Every structure is written in structure tokens, then in C-alpha cells.
Image (cartoon, rainbow, N blue to C red; front, side, top):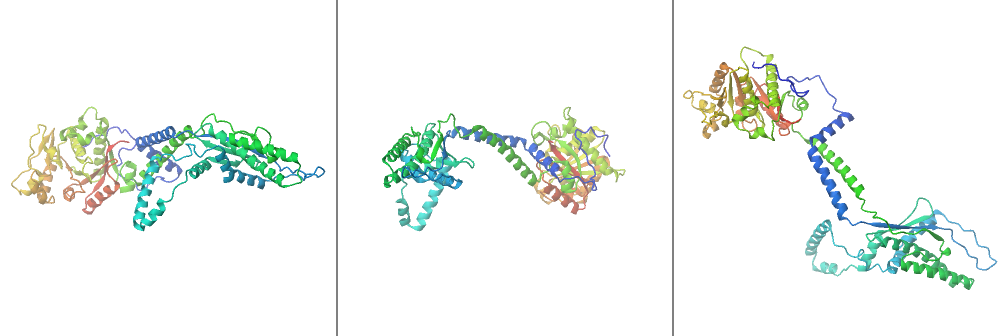
Length: 557
């Protein structure tokens, strides 16, 4: 036909004239999965980087806007209960302590009675941190939604219920105590008899006071019980009563001051082994950990979304996937020319001259690959005549006109005489911008009164398909013998290329394709879907038209 040697390929996969039905590649297994994940991440690397940056920014904003939290802890060692003889000659029973008793003492520390003692002793009911806090954005939104639903419910159930709800008031002291209890914690350290009493607050001085006061309150509660028992038993001596009273007084003073007792409390059956110290730094929020988590979450979440999007993405992206999805071979990959979407913005004349530009190396190589693929596909049916090649797409904008015009220019520069039937009316204007002559539609509609007059664009003969008269375009039948006669006459002069209208918009493209020997479908990378290619292939095959393969236009990979 019309072709010389193809240009040097810039990728390992440039031309695949015929699919290999017996050749199968493994698409399963962990390696293939990792490859797909990596490909999805690289494909959406810009969006992935933006998502990770947003996650890090959100984490940084959270760290900066969240007030620091300080935590202090006091440790208490449980000791066996001391048994004091009631008389001087009585021998004390052996003491013992088990893990169940340790768990019981832990519940005593967490009890509302002990917490109320500390809460009242330190006068925390008026502490600003434990009072009502201004709601955040999320709380405001949820509160408004709750109020709206409540108003709707009140309107539906009557004003009596609304009055009953309005009469309910929140006790400020109770609210402050609940906030205090949420910040308080007590736990056993492992399986030992050591109890850790901790408190968290935004005030760096308050946690140590409350933790020490809670430990002192625990000692006070234990020794006060023994003091009461001593007062009620006549068998105890006055000295024993005085010792217990001194211990109670010391523990009570320690609770009120938020510190540990100034003297030992041996009868409390517990011993404080670690006092709560004022924290040197905040325990929350942990900025480094939050930022690291946000980065990892953003990366993994972004990759997961990218993989999920790739699984459901049916748009054409890789030439290797075409045979599997459509059964069509990939004839060539035409790269996107310099400049974002410049192919779609270039004028008709400039688009036709792209292949001849000095810096259009990859683009020109892709057009040469297309020409070579067509020649190989036509080789088995070679005759004295060159094939009439139709190039089309399912939707407008895929670049069928661009590829047709540049393929025609390539053939012209090889010394071939080329005639193009163009679906783009603007392409019929010459370099001087003069008006177009009669179109193929005009020739068909006029019978034999109008002759086909081809315009000349830099050596390529061009005839528009559509008429400048809209009424004629509505009723023309491109299967008319006069259309075939015009195409046959052009074929006698040399190569013939037909730029088909979009196949998905009307049946005119199929009617024109019946005059072609072979058809090439154009798919824009990342725009045209496999379903559209299958629809176009089905429409053409039902009409008995031979489709030799697909060209991927605007390739970026």
C-alpha cells in the first residue's frame, strides 16, 4: 500500500497487528496483584499526593487546635490486713492477701463515694475545665439536627410532652462530677498488688493534686473504718484509739490539700510507693504519632481508593488490555503532543501538519506505526488497489479526524496521492481560509448535476462529508450508489481515507463504513471506555464491516 519502514519504537509495545489467541498471561497471584496496585498508585499519583497532603494537614490542624492533656499517676501497694489483738496477751491471727482482694480494692478506688470525697475536698465543682464547654463544629451540627428532630417530634406528640422535657434541667455539680470521673482512672499494674491512680487534665498542676488526693482518700477510707470499729469496741485501749485518730486526721488533711499524708498510715492496709508528680510535658495529643498515622492512613487509604477505582474503571488505558476486553488488536499508540490537550485545540490545518513538524518525533512515530499496522493487516488481502480505510470513534473528540489528516500527510510525504473524506467541515477549508466546495452530501442529493470537487490542503485532496445546508444532512443516504461512485473514483487516483462521523451519534458512520475495505477504531486514553469500543465493534460487525483493530490516541504512559 502506502508505507515504508516504521519508525523506531519508543516502547516495547507499539504495534500489535494481530492478537495471539493462544498466548495467555498470568493475571492472578500476589505478584500480579502488587503490580496492579503499583500501577493504580502511579496512575493516580497526583491525586494520591494531594490526598496524603490533606490528611497530614488535617492531622497537623488537629494537633495544633487540640489543647494539650497532662497526666499524673500515684501508685499504691496493697499490704496484708493488720490484725491487732484486743488484749495484751492475745496473739494476732496471720495476715493474708489474694488477687481477688486486690480487685475489690480497685473497685473501691473507682467508687463514686471515694471520688465524691476527692471532688468535694478539692472544691472542683467550680473548676472551669469541668464545667460546660463550648461545642465544636461537629457537636453544633449534631445538636442542631437533634433539636430539629426533637421539635418535629414535639409538634407531633403535643405540647404537654414538650413542657415535661423543658422542665428537666441539668445539675451543674452533677455534670462537673461526671466530667471529673471520666478523666479519672485506676488500674492494677500487671498481676501485682500495685494499684495506679491517674488523672488527666489540661491544667498541668491539677493531675498530681487529684491523683495524690485520691490515694490519700483511699488510705483515709481504710483507716477511718478501723477507727470507727475501735470506738465501738470497749476492748481496745485508749492508745489504740489515739493512734487511729491521728492517722485519720493526717489522711483527711492530705485529701484536702491534694497531697500525700505527712505521716505513715500503717493501719490502712496499703502503702503509697509512688507519689504523683507534676508532669513535665503533655501526654496528649501525641503530635508525631498522629502525623505518622495520618500519613500512613492517607497513603494506604489513597492506594485503596485508587485500586478500587481502577477495578471499576472501564476506560481504555493500556494496549495490553484491549485484546482481553474487546478482542481487538492495538494497532498503535499515538502519544499526546506537547501541551495539555493541544490536539483538541489545534486548528484543522495545524492538526493536519503535526506529523511534518520538526519536534513531533514521538507523534510522527506513532502515525508511522499506524500506517505500518494497516499495511500488515491488509497484506493477506493485497491486490493491485490500495484499501479504502475508514477511521472512526464512538464519540466525538477521540481524535479520529486528527489521525486521519496526519496519516494522509504522512502518505503524501511518501509520494502517494491521497484523498480524504472528512467528517469535520472546517477541514475542507484551504490554507487561505476560503469557502469549501460541494460536499459528498451535496453530490448525493443533487443526483448527477453536481460533481465532487476536492479541496487541496498541502497536497492532500479533501472532500467534506457534511453539507453546509442542514436540510440536506437530515435526509441523505450514504449507502447511495453515487457515494460509492465518488469513493471509487477517488480510489482510482490513489489512497482513500474516510474520516467517519461518531458511530454513537447516528447510522451515517456505518453507512459510510460500508464503502471501506477496513475500519480502524480510535480510543482516547482515559476517555473512551471498553464498553464504547464494544458497542462500536458490534454495530460495524452487524453491518458486515471488517474492523482490523484499535488505535489508542493521546497516550500518556
